[in-house]
Length: 232
Image 1: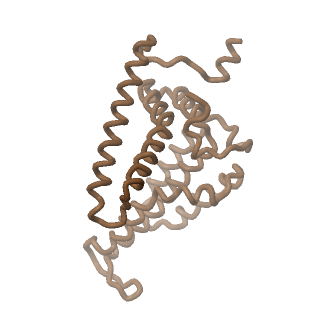
Image 2 (image 1 turned 120 degrees about the vertical axis):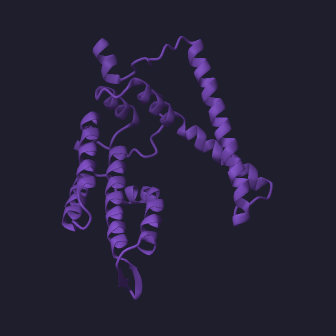
Image 3 (image 1 turned 180 degrees about the vertical axis):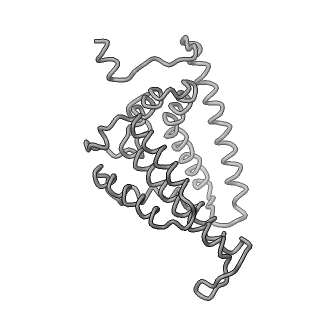
């Protein structure tokens, strides 16, 4: 994998968290998430304790909090769903700011927000302190199926390619006077998304054929720096 791909989430640094082995960080994230998911709704001290642990890890990693907060926008769909839950759920009603809402729905929404925020923040911390190639090597060391690791590697490698393609399609639409400012413009965006999917699928087919033409047999060559130094 080229060194210039998939680094948009990574924050370059030399902290102890950056230097920790990738497979240990993956195991730590998995164990942390299992603990978070296992906490029953309403155990707010436990959620606060998990948050303090994450804050401590971020402080040790020297990753700027603003760097992580800007990328937590990915959580917005979960936030919207959690906000709607107290109004849509059934059960006993309580008043919040003069508005009657479902008490079980309110508890479930709070748990969803807490667990989702902790999970997103922990995942972003891992991504910010681990280069993609090291993360893939760590997954290989954890005996994740080789095919899945290859798929993730290609996904990271070509994410920037697909993003650039989206940008070019947006420029092409705007150069023709199109501005997505109303609901009735959504069909145009949907057709653009379909065209982007087809182009990405065709690109993947061409890449696979090129790999087969170069002798690909189901395994990628080992290009990890530590392996190369050992062989030298």
